[in-house]
Picture 1 (tube, rainbow, N blue to C red):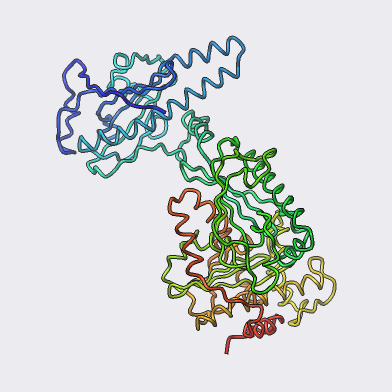
Picture 2: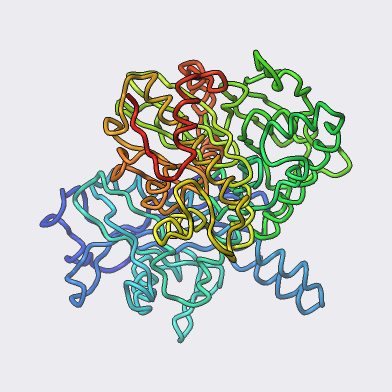
Length: 576
């Protein structure tokens, strides 16, 4: 880490440049012909961070734009040592020294940006944006900055005839100034960089490889989702999906519970831990991150999946009153979760299992509501996480009503197709068959079909009837109609790609929500990822179960009535 220990002010020889007096553009403080020298200190004696800063202006071609020039370097010792190691054939040491020098230069620049902001603020200037030589400005600006900061004397540097700075571990920064002191835009925008093999971008990527990271995990009944989160920047990777091999013991939570009770509990535990290890290893390999960088893991999932992960007895989930071992947030370490012999991350990495609401409305719903800030909404919102164990929540007048409706094997098939990259068009195909008469309103499939079997159609009927009836039951409990719902949020990777018109046509979603449906992807994973960088995350997620009320569906007569009515495709019955 770079630390500053002194700042001195030098005055170049020669007459002040009158163009450096910005009194027409800015509040005038003092003649701006002085050069600031800022030095840093590193633990390694061969790394000598130092920078020279000077106010100036760009030429007439750029409208005399006022700027702050900065030349920074870490000296030439590290490069010399790297070159020496390479000549001796020690390429690993050479690469290590070179990377260390790049990281030191980037770290110095980041610390320097803070001082630059402070300096400009004290002088009454804002920083409109960072101007990059070779992108926003011609490379010749490096010579302008070199001369203006008198880097040959202040930093003992040289500029070659080709315009290259020596030592090579050096940078030229140019900041456009403004009169708005609230502006402080010092960051390099890598997205705007057009330079192939940009050394600056490579330095950032190299530094990112050293940043502390966390892993968010959505423990789905059929699919596991993993996401890498940079704990310094908040950046998230593209999710990695893998199969939950526990599905060999059943598609839905009830069959998993029965398998656990019948003596398969240990097998289920071993399978999920193996899947997690493999998924984490694949994620780290894909993102080129060492496991030593992992400092924290957050896990969301339904209550059954989390019980099976922790090896908790599932007997309490099998029958009324459906009592889980725990629904609270659990704070663990990696060594508590995995065997010490095969840890996928450092053994002291923090592991948080997010809290749930009930036996059948789990941490995945809590994470989803948290991800979308629905726990803070004043609107009437309906949240449905479509999957093998479809959970849902209705938010109304500060209350959260929840329910769970098992969709079973129809959604398991869809999840398997997503893993294979086929996509999700089962619902759309089903609606198409209804329109052309191949599928009649009772669900009878006429003739051979290359995509569906009769059993597939029956599974879809059971799933869509359960989900529709669950939604209507929640609405009935709050004395609301589908038309009164402000937004229906469809969560889960299945919901993200769902043909909404087809879903309404077959009776999966109430028609009254049409035009106000928002697909929002895997919110369970999004919530788990957000939790890793949110200092108030534990308070937020604890508050959601506290304000939730579960509406049991198993013995609910209204649910059973709507469910039976919705088994056919033709009948979309409104609540009386």
